[in-house]
Image 1 (tube, rainbow, N blue to C red):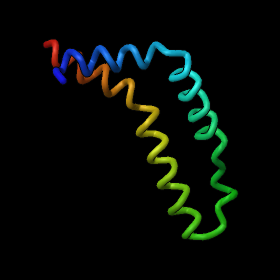
Image 2 (cartoon, rainbow, N blue to C red):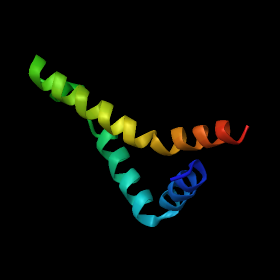
Image 3 (cartoon, one colour):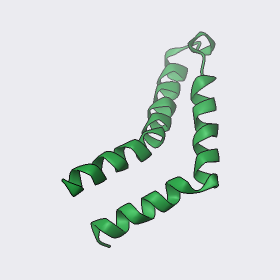
Image 4 (cartoon, one colour):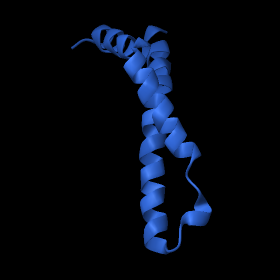
Length: 73
């Protein structure tokens, strides 16, 4: 797959209602995390890992757009 194909596929994905709904649900999950509900170190590490993964997914569109801009330069 060429870079152009990769970016075209990504743009197509980002325009889908399903992607927008998925991102909205993930953002809601992140927004609803409450540190006061974490009672021990194990739960804290678990929550931290979940939030890191959610933030990575939430940032995928911006990262891809940034990489495409760099590729075009």
